[in-house]
Every structure is written in structure tokens, then in C-alpha cells.
Length: 483
Image 1: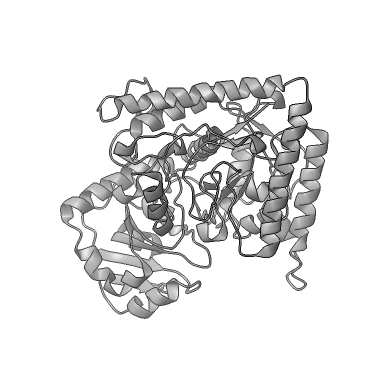
Image 2: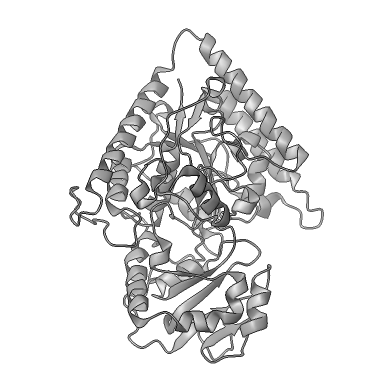
């Protein structure tokens, strides 16, 4: 597939994200690695050519063109900052040896992952792994993923800034729909494998603020002053960029933040380098709201009602699932009202409820259903996707502009169904039209992929914590910072 065709395809399929975003192979439709860069933007080189159609020039820092004049001025100012910083770098007589060493290691990792394409299609992985060897059709390229994952484990180092005080920093909720913020912060700060206490050895730097906690403690629901986010985040970035050289060295390109709150993207706007340059790990992975899958990471939304992480996964699928499709949830957003209009309590096979009857168990309905409907609400992500995977139920994805978690590695078409809004009236026929053979393969895919969405404390290899780290690793591989 040529680049022009790929752009056209991705313009109608926003979730089209090439595996690893820097490997080239037309046979497997992966996107290409290019090492070209314009001299005016020598500080940063974005390496992937997976360009959205709105990007006019692949040799700049690859920022979108906005219709909003204020946002476009922010882009222009940031590109100007890149030029200025590049000129300052050129005038320096001494190179940043630490950065050169880090980039040399990342360059070697890219080359090793490229080699994996030579064994694509073989059944046996050449890499020894006592715990797990990725294989099967749930992966875009299991061998490339395996090589990348093992290199991540061997090489990747993360520095967590110690500045900031709980509860706004180094703390987050570990239950309810925003649980991933607190879970990740806790697991990351307790991690001895990826975390380094020496910032000179780090590949990326974690900004450990919690959007949820900032809003909970400082946001007045009456006044509704959103500028509280601006004040906190600008002050924090000013603090770490003054105390350490790392933010200014890369204009934030090797820094990442994480948020499960709907306002995560909004929060990053107040620091334009964070919005346009940094790695943003977001549940609200909406490409229509300028989520950029080349640098941003989609975060799975996991609703831990009590904070308990034990017993979430149904060990084996039920042999006799009596319900064709199921959804229960509030009617909000643009998609769900359409789903309710066509299907709420109108069909015994498609069980849709805005409020589940008291005699029914939500968990048991999920486990008894062949397909679990996962419509977007106010935002594109839905915790029901992971709930369906836990319940051995094939997810039916009903969303727009949503980049699915780990979709640079996982082939979601092998264990889920995507249904457009216009197809909702025909939903039952679509589900009935799936052959038993295909359904059984998808259920097996759901069972295989469960390990990548499970939360463990302490983390276990290939679980959701490690998959998030791997997604950040891929984005770091996708940028080169010149020393």
C-alpha cells in the first residue's frame, strides 16, 4: 500500500495504526520508518510516516493544521521554538553525550526489530521466553511484538519526577471509572525494573500528576473555573524544567503524562509542548479531538467498582450462551440514544437497558451473552470493552474516531466486531450473520487477549501495566532527539 493510499485509508479509518509505527513491509501493511528530517527542525525527527491527512509537511514536527486561530498560533509558536532551540544546539561546542548514548541504544533497538520481519510467517519464535510467547492471529505481527517487548524489558528506563505533593501528585483513585490513574501511578512508583533514579539514564520522564485529583480537590463545581488545570500544570512544568535540563532538552518530547479522566486532553492544552510534543497516555483517545496515535497512547478504561483486582476474569467461557447481545448503561453522548431508540427492551435476543432490572445481574448478563455491546458515551472510550474481555464476551465496538488500546500490537478485528452508527438498525442481522466458526475463533481470541488487560499487583509480564509501558516504549522509539 503506497503512502498516499495509506493516508486515504486512514482518513476513513481513524483507528488505522501501523504496528510499531516504524517498520516497513507492504506485505503486512505496516507503516514505514523514515530517517529524513528538515534541517530547520533538526532537534526532533518524527520517524513514522503514518500521517493524518491534515498534516501538510512530513519533515516538520508533524503537527496538525487547526481551523481554530488560537490553536494554530500555538502550533506556529511551537515550531518557532523548535527552530530557536535547534539554532542554540548548533552553536554549542559540546554535544549532549548522555542523549547521544541513549539515542544510539534506541537506534540499535529499531534495527533489531526490523530484522524480525525476516522471520514473519514462521510458526516458531526464535526468542526464548519462560512466561509467554506471543503467537496467533490476535497480533499484527507476534514475532515483532515479542522482539520489541523483550528489548523493552532489557533497555527501557523511566524517571519519575519526585516534585509535587499528594493528593494532586503521586496519587490517584484506585477504584471507580478513573482507577487506571491511581493504579498506574502506584505501580510505576513501586517498580524497580523500569524506574531509574538516575535521570541521565532515562529514555522517558513521567509527570505524575492526577487530573482526577486536581479536579476533585481544586475545581469548584459552582464557579467551574477550568483555569485551575492551567495554573497547576504550568507551575509544575515550570518547576521541573527549571530544576532539570530534560524538558527543555527535548521540548517535552521524551516526557509522558497519563489520564483516565475525560478532561485529560483539555488539561494538556494549557502547556502547548505537552499537547503537541509530549506522549499523552489517554483514555479519551479521540482523533477528532487531536489525539495523535503517532505520539499518544490509548489507555484502556477499566472500572474497578471497589478497587479489588482479584477475580475479575472469567476463567472459561460458558458453553451455552443464551443471549445474543447485551448492553446496560445510561443514555448519554450521541451514539447511545440511537442504540436505545432501536433496541431498548424491544427484542429478547438484543437485550438493551438504560437501567438493568433488579432481578438481573449485570455480571451474569455479560457472561451469558455472546456479544457485549460497547457504545461510546460522552467520550469515545468505554469500560465495557475490558468488561467484555474479562467475561469472555466478544466486544461489539460502536464508536467513532476511537484509537483502540494496544492497537499497534493487537489486531482487534480478530476478537471484536466494529459496527457503525448507521448500521445499528440492522444490528441483530449483523450478529446473526456471524458464522459459528468465526464466533468460536473470536471467543478464543478474547480468551487469549485477556492477559494483556489484567491488572496485577505486583505487575506480571505482558499484563496491562506492561502493555501500557510497551506502548510508551513504541512512541519513544518513534522520535529521535538530537544531542
